[in-house]
Length: 309
Ligand code: NCD
Image 1: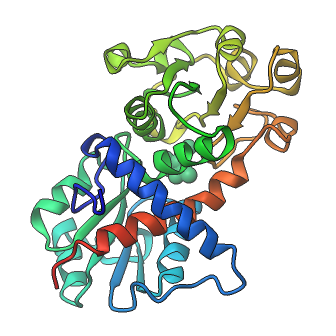
Image 2: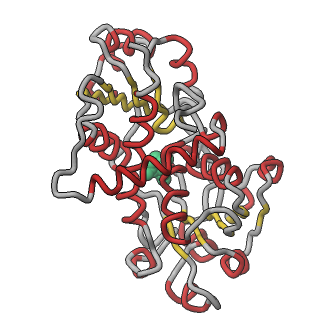
């Protein structure tokens, strides 16, 4: 396969295994590029990309912008906090105004699940979902699988544990789709109230005892509790959450194997993971960030090659 089966990256759900393979192969090349003294290629000199962030972001926004600049695309940035959205403009009007300025691709983060899908049906540009509410965060799942592949050779057959707020996490859902598609085994762990009832229908098993779950896995992906998405309390106190589901060095060292520890960031140090674990040799958190740029370059490059101009 030499091109993606999709024209937009709206979710992992819409991809085929071959798309993921092609993205990783392309990312391998870009990873080599970004480690050169001159970290830039002229590939997208004729492409203009708008980064529309209607929700807070540090890593993802910077990573996309860097990926676009490394490909020599023209980039415009928009964040909702300082825009006319606050004056009552609709999403389609905002985006159509931006597209009137001849933009080819839109990278969008939005609090509403499905916002990217909606947009792809109404505007004439290639859309990349950079996180749509509690739904999907496809580039995060791609960079997570890419980092597992880099660390352990392949994703197929690996036992991956996702710990934390599964219910509100788009990282969890996109990771489940991506990992299952590549033949990994997936287990989730967290308070029962934060594990959706449908989760087993996605081919995922559930374990509420953290130590047992860790004994099982090759990789543990520790997620942040998404407090900003909760209207009610899902567990008694943060302290109790940490006692039951927080990963500390004592637990990590008590396991009979060296597992790989991941986190998408931002980390709440001392809540889901202690500093000594986050900064340990077993953690690949900063590798994930570095790989994010190469993987996003690959996605943008492959989608741009499908744009009819
Ligand atoms: C995640 C997100 O925004 O969904 N962060 C990220 O993109 N690196 C995870 C989170 O906010 O906890």
